[in-house]
Length: 126
Length: 343
Image 1 (tube, helix red, strand yellow):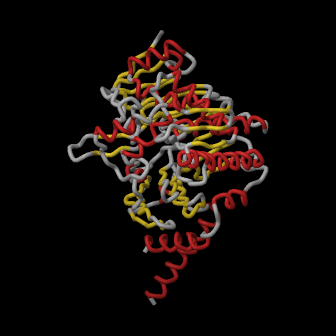
Image 2: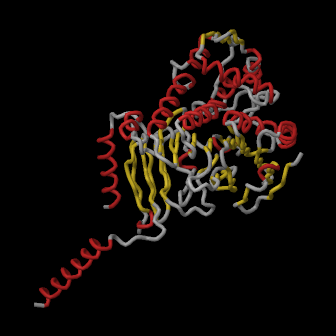
Image 3: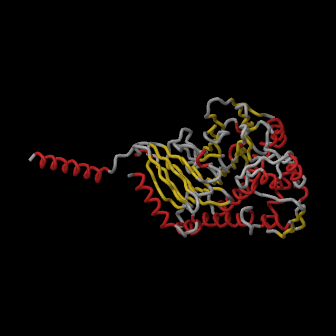
């Protein structure tokens, strides 16, 4: 009897959440920062960094090279790469910059879709 | 779980995308409303963003860039530059001739602080292959005998190099191409756009709301933003030592910007130069040249010409800003002191 009641309450809660999502959408962080990862000009992954709770990594395999990408709440970086110049690794964490992380040898780019840069920069000369 | 799920997703996407070239991918999405174009060319990441859609202009831009890459890339054996380096004499296209003529005239203007024939020296240091190496002085002395832009002969479109000479147009090509992209966009009636060739920035007009673009200037080590420049209708090009460098066992840093006189990485006390100019090619050439010149000579060059503006950063963390940029430059990084350069 108790078990059944728990199930009913549980199902009711799930239904309420589902209805909430349908009507109001997923809860959005006001500083939503979406990282767009592309390989050879083709978008392969889109991550809302404001929704990342626990850090994780994943690999991106190009034709010959690979990049290990680390994701944390609000930031993303290339942690490891087997490209010869390691420029993508040296670029460090991308948090709010319009400057994309670029790995030329593997044709990987990570860009941020955000409006919240400190200087409201449109582009970076480097 | 999350990791593996995403990794699988990436792999699936990769599998589904393999076999399609960059050009095809972009062509597929080309339409009248297209506002942005990104692709890899000229050993860089090319990005063109319009404030109003114009797919026709962007398609022309892509074809233009890939066409010039095919002529000038030293990494392509079939390029005119590669053939010229190998054969030492070649009838080149009008575009290559135009860039070569500009390169030689520009080298003259900066008194040899810039030289397209430094290429064999850059190769000897390993900067083209990432197989870094400190060449011996005798090797450099031998290589330097063939470094002299004045030994490039031009007879119409027939170009002849000295016997051991090899050239690389990479120091000006991005600026030339940025100017060309701007011309294409303007021909198509584009009034507001941002062109970014791997950090070589060219601004067309102002932003869609009429305000100025805010261009970040990278810190000398490339990890932060030194400051911002509020600009309209300008080319902005930065040369920094830390773009490409290696460190020896004793911790000495060797970067890719070479002094054509010594064959060694430029050691002028300047660690970063940003040039603001109406011309992309001029800005591109000057950013390297002023890096080689050093603060005093660069300041004198600016006073003498005053047809560009500059932000020069020294290894003492001093930032020197020429008069025309004093109002538009804002410092964002602590630990630096800003100085003005006036005539």
